[in-house]
Image 1: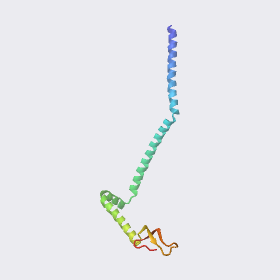
Image 2: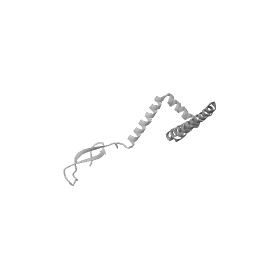
Image 3: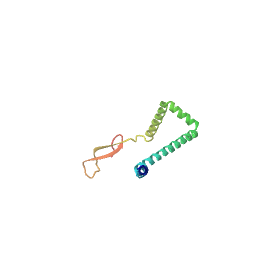
Image 4: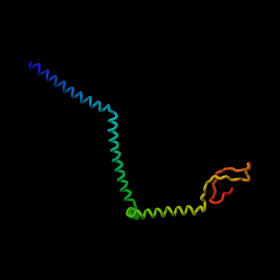
Length: 142
C-alpha cells in the first residue's frame, strides 16, 4: 500500500504544481488583456517622462535667460521686486500719459449716440421722425 500511496502523492503534488502554474499563467494573460489598466500604466509613464522633459527644458531656459539678460535690465528687475510700489507708480504714469496723448490728439472727438424726435424740413413726409444719430458733444446738426 505504501508503494501505491507514494505515486499517488507524487501525482497529486504534480497536479497541484501544475494548477499553481496555470493560475499564474491565467493571471498574466488577464493582465495582458486588461487594456484599460495597461493604458493607464502607459499614460502614467508618458506623463512622468513629459514632466521630466518640461522641467529640464524650463531649467535650461531660465539659465539661458539669466545669462543673456543685460546687467541694467537685471538691476531694474531687482528694483521692481524690492519696491513694487515704485513699479506700480511708473506703470500708472505711463498709462495716464498715453490717455492724455490720445485725448489731446483728436481734440473734442468724443461722441455720443442718442435717439430723439426731430423735425426735418427736407423730409419727404412732413412731421416728426425718430432717428438714432451720432454727433459731437453739443448741439445736434442735421
